[in-house]
Amino acid sequence: MGKVKIKNLKKSFGDLEVLKDINLEVKEQEVICIIGASGSGKSTLLRCINALEEASSGTIEVDGNDITRADGNINKYRQDIGMVFQQFNLFPHMTVLKNITFAPVALKLKTKEEAEETARKLLRSVDLEEKANVYPEQLSGGQQQRVAIARALAMNPDVMLFDEPTSALDPEMVGEVLNVMKQLAKDGMTMIVVTHEMGFAREVADRVIFIDEGFIVEEGPPSEIFGNPKNQRTINFLNKVL
Amino acid sequence: MSIPELIVQYWPRLMAGLVLTVEITIISLFFAGILGLVFGLLSVSKKKGLRAIALVYVDIVRGTPLLVQAFFIYFGIPQVLGIQSDPVISGIITLSLNAGGYLAEIFRGGIESISRGQMEAARSLGLPYGMAMRSVILPQAVKTMTPALINQCIITLKDTSLLSVIGVTELTQTGRLIIANNFQSFEVWAIVAVMYFVIIMILSKISKRLERKMSYGKSKN
Ligand SMILES: Nc1ncnc2c1ncn2[C@@H]1O[C@H](COP(=O)(O)OP(=O)(O)OP(=O)(O)O)[C@@H](O)[C@H]1O
Ligand SMILES: [Mg+2]
Image 1: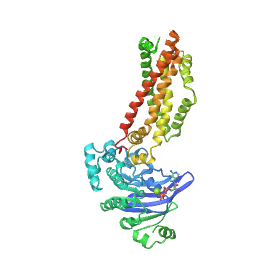
Image 2: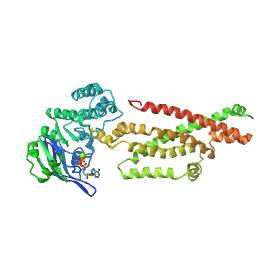
Image 3: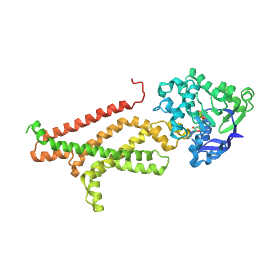
Image 4: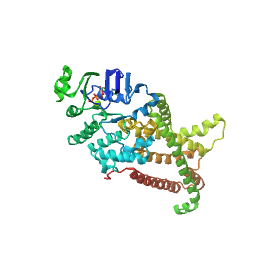
């Protein structure tokens, strides 16, 4: 049973057709890594999955609900999809703890006490327990991104989407964020990760998807995509990045 | 009469004028704040129609002189409606609408200055638009807006002096009436100017302190 089912997804911005026909099924607990050149539509695909971008046509089901027809229910739907952004996007006017507890409390999913207990547990799991009461700007990029992951997890999502979560980080901080993500994958989270970290994709992904010019050109286990790519475009791309 | 003598003699009237000035300012800014917030929100809406409404309002306010707005509201509209108009109420309506237009622009600018990622992060957690706007965007926006807001408060306070032309006995009109009695233009206008100056200085001091308080958890440098 697919956790995420994307059928014939198309997305245009005006005249620019960015996603041309995307079909993708992500199984429960599967970790998918999406790779591809800049401008190939990776972010757009991810953003369509939680309706930050509206699909032009096609369907996107998450846990059986079609988000392209969610209409008024979109907020309910998004609660089950965690998203981690390249730029962290923590709320700068809230402490780390408040960043994590704000949504579950405001949406009345948890009491303040319950939410704080969960938040502290999550902070422990990303190794930032002692930072609960500081503001985001007092944290390094790597720490901010780990808080952002904890914030998304606080909603107890079914799927986690990552859009180049380490691209804005100094090299020495990439590892700490990837480690958190590896642990998350080990714990059985369903994950869709757009990344330029080929090492991470090779190690953690169950399946690697190569996107080019709005199509999924090639997909398969990392050993095949990296070890024995079939499509010439995949080969060209990998030659450039590896 | 010397300036000290003038002050002693006219103190009650001058103070009454000053109090009315401050009252009109506060009441007008209260309504202007509501108008500014509402039209500011309309102007960042995704719906074209709503944005157009805000645009028309702001353009009218900015495209016509305050004095003309005051005359229109005090003389023009009551004539058409066949009602008796009250100078103070007309003055408050005028200043509210006027400052509201400028505040709408300030709100729009403040909201647009917050990166799109903030709204997206909030929405991705399942927060509805209104909740995200209120709890995530606006608190940050208001912080960046603070200097402009303070500036608008001072402008509106000074603009109350224009209401003297429709007969509101605020501070400026009080000065004019006193001079009509004693012809001491130099002394009276000097006193009035100092009174405006002092009240505006007090206002900026308070705002400065407020502004400093609002910088959350910043490593103060
Ligand atoms: N809101 C938008 N309006 C217009 N065009 C857009 C918009 N968002 C993205 N695009 C265009 O869509 C194309 C795909 O963008 P997208 O961000 O999905 O690429 P990407 O694969 O994530 O690239 P990168 O690796 O640089 O992040 C680009 O040509 C981009 O300019
Ligand atoms: Mg991208």
